[in-house]
Length: 138
Ligand code: THU
Image (cartoon, rainbow, N blue to C red; front, side, top):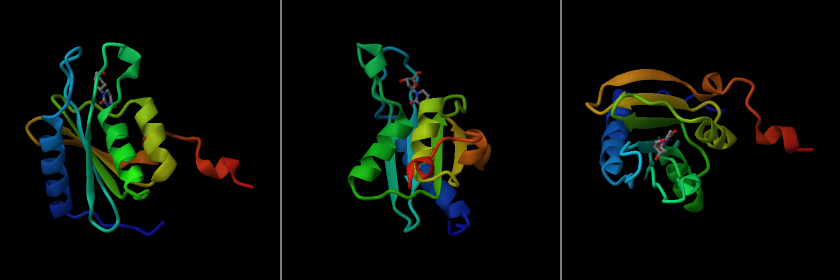
């Protein structure tokens, strides 16, 4: 993996994008809005919000919305991601796994509603010994 030095401008752009998409969250059940923004190595940003469902298990988290949008547009590599919630909530296990598939070394930044960064770390440290595609390759 090529080391990517995240700049404060990247952080600012990601936080702005995540804040914007968070307002689109469809959350009539939990009322917990989540916004995610993923940065690709070329500087492109993909965003996603959580979309709940009356059949609760059909809900998709913000992080997975963003990953699915990116992959379906042909982008499979991410250098960083911002997740914004009212209180700095961190990605669930399923979202960690889905992001790990594509970018175990990406930086994860947790941000609270005001825009304040509460945590910045590396995904593979948030999903220790994570299962990845290398285990299935011959
Ligand atoms: N949620 C996310 O969008 N991302 C996570 O990683 C954790 C949970 C959403 C799902 C649901 O709409 C709401 O937050 C409460 O669980």
